[in-house]
Image 1: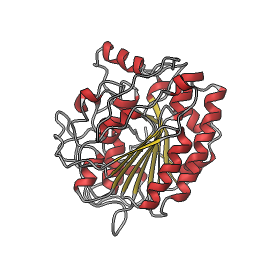
Image 2: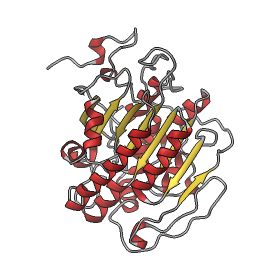
Image 3: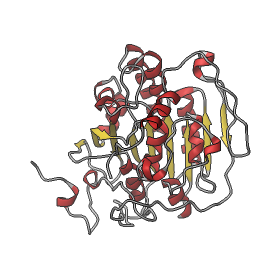
Image 4: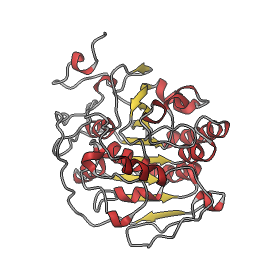
Length: 356
């Protein structure tokens, strides 16, 4: 399933309102619970990113509901390499435009692409907003199925109601970790699916610091969310001098994290959306086009992907790497074209689109 256009305009307006250009109005405090991080002042309210980290304890087990309404062939349960599955890392750069990723001064991101397979023409789901897009990135289904149609922290709305790559991996006995730079990621903290969940509030340098700690502690699945590209896009505009300068600082943080990862790890680096002017959320190439990079054992090197890639493919590709499948049907599929060794049921013809 590819990005849909049926969502009411009111839902898009809510997403833009929640993630529009920052103002100097302080954010209201949220009620703390044993499994939700306490609210911190917004960056716009303080003028700086507060230097605190809120770590959440593991949550009790529960079974998420299966997805409905979409069809896709299940991925085989064997990963691309022999032996035990590799550790998998998903890196999400919030608000990273594809053209900025391709042409910016980002040596660590470009080095990652050079040792893997990549495209700067992947597509996110509609609306291109942080919470709906990350829900699709983690679940393999579109917003009309996962139901996270809002784009702000709202504990009263509950948690994501479909399986995620965290729930699938945790059920298989794997260690799952999430390091997030926005409070709204609490909506993905399904009980019994994330072993270590940390909400970091001091920007991408703090994100990298915490992610290095988590990597050294051991994991099977690690997701790291870098919030700064989106923050500075709203603040000074996408593709502004400030935005591009801050992308270089985010790339520096990326380099520190990559150096701390185990050599056998497979890394997927992508974004939830782009942006134009001071906003995002429209069905425009600047908002909808995202980078997608994968590197590690069993992955082609310095290979430009030719087939279509969407946000929903991220979760299903991660599951394939871990030797797992999603329960029920999903819209995403493994990005077969990226791998050097294809599963027995996948031919080169089906993995790589025929030339026009």
